[in-house]
Image 1 (cartoon, rainbow, N blue to C red):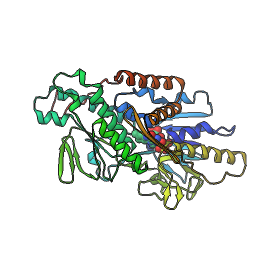
Image 2 (cartoon, rainbow, N blue to C red):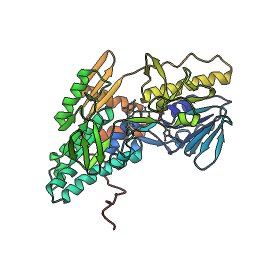
Image 3 (spheres, protein in one colour):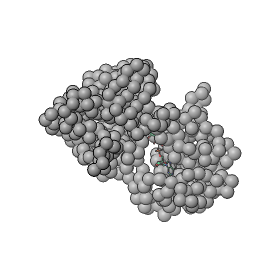
Image 4 (cartoon, rainbow, N blue to C red):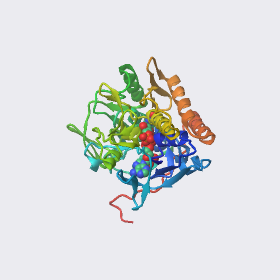
Length: 417
Ligand SMILES: Cc1cc2nc3c(=O)[nH]c(=O)nc-3n(C[C@H](O)[C@H](O)[C@H](O)COP(=O)(O)OP(=O)(O)OC[C@H]3O[C@@H](n4cnc5c(N)ncnc54)[C@H](O)[C@@H]3O)c2cc1C
């Protein structure tokens, strides 16, 4: 079996699939599994990278049936049952599972990416962290008030959970953490904008929780701009309909596009590029190829699909393990995949959250604690759990964040030294 992608879906599958006849090759373009729900905390200096990512090879050290390969897949030859690697090698499979996730989408405006990085990988998080910290450093050196104001304006585009979480912590960073350390600027004067094209932030949550989230953000000092589609983004600023906002740091949290798995297989995809799979998560025409997680479009009926969230990817990985185990043992296949929605959660800064568990809805500090405990529980290993809990406690009590080093400094294009 070849599994491509050691994210939530692929990892769950490799962990659950144990059969004496199974040999698993797990391929990922990165050497680590990443806990994306806490990526925004790396981008905003709360957590160091090593607390939310683990080498995949190490996770399977006690599984001789699992071979881990660091390689980038560029295609699939389904006729000859081979996976194509970037370096030209071909890897044969009996069963293939594509769990290659999604990237951000700029809705056809890919030129915005340079000015407004999205948040998906550790590299994205450290790029955003570097830009945030450098903006304050450059503002401290800047004599011109207009340029200083642009440096102290931070925009987050997209009012979903990631956008809300980023904006809240950036505001806390400026207004709570950094201000005593600067002499020429007052970081508390920084503007943090959360720009959303739709009518409200957190559109997947009930309206009252969205309204609470907006008020909580505003209390932290975030300017929430709803109904404001962005028309252009450069390193100098953002254009909204009829308005230009000078702004040197923009983060993109607005759209996702699936990995090109559907293209590799030549199967039908939905508008976001997700491969449309059958109820058992195989793709039409290929009983031996499964697509799971963010890169699959799994129908829930009535035009709805399974959401692109971690529990959905894990459930799909667990389900495919059962299907494959049944096939290997000659047992009848389990019924179609059934998705169980556990709820939606989002934090606003380090003291409030909103939770929608269906019948149970919560907001405020207690919701934040529940969010925190749930996230610590889902991390891998005691060391990471203890380290994250300690980082949060320290940040909560002292107002100080531990991951504030600026590394790999980008030299502005205007400088040649
Ligand atoms: C910033 C952010 C915050 C999020 N917050 C939450 C949250 O709070 N709660 C929640 O439930 N969900 C959250 N999500 C969504 C959740 O992380 C995804 O739904 C989940 O990761 C999907 O799992 P997956 O296995 O499909 O893909 P991923 O976990 O993305 O894994 C895909 C893997 O495939 C690898 N890969 C991709 N292309 C190739 C290739 N060509 N060759 C080799 N390897 C490849 C990647 O390196 C990656 O390891 C968040 C996502 C982001 C980006």
